[in-house]
Length: 283
Ligand code: TMP
Image (cartoon, rainbow, N blue to C red):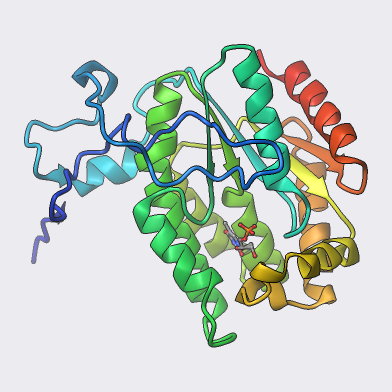
């Protein structure tokens, strides 16, 4: 029997250790800004005590350690994901929520999916800005989103949670459940399995769904002229109907995790609603 030893090869000029400092930035984005935090700030070395996955060799990390142990003890941080169709106003509201936490002197970072890491941003480019049309099949898309997610969890989210930081993520695993599973009709079993494999034991503590009717989301997208070439944003009304319904079904099934807010209200009203719900549910 052939035994395959699998390690992460070091990238030129980069350590292959999972950093818990480098991938993390404290959110500074302004309300109304993109809310996206990338690229990471320059590395500062955290102590070994906060890196339980660190192995003795700095140049090679056992891939099985990386894949199966994103969190080795109970994290003290909080993961809040934001979901909804394009044009729902997620990034604006993420920036508002980050600002609320910062006012309370809580440590908070923002990130996004797909993206949030160098690898993830490259994957995002392949999927989102693929200008040649619809040739990415749903299966490939699912795997690419999962790959970006796996990297984000291990490089940014899990280390931040271990350090007690609040992580606000623009999309997380529910996007795959809804977009690939429900809207693109991939079977639920593989979608859930792949999602689970990608995130390990890192699940959102709370998920905010900003709900907008499909025509409202599409109309807002059309106003964002620079985004129009995005392949994902050329989908039709029926697709976004399925997306919307998918999120509402998920939220109904897991009311303890999901908060659904009406995205047609004013920016200020949505902000207040999210903050009151989050405050009520967080310890
Ligand atoms: P957004 O960052 O503007 O929301 O765009 C990301 C696009 O990628 C959006 O069309 C939703 C899509 N997407 C999926 O289809 N599945 C996923 O798992 C994720 C994270 C995003």
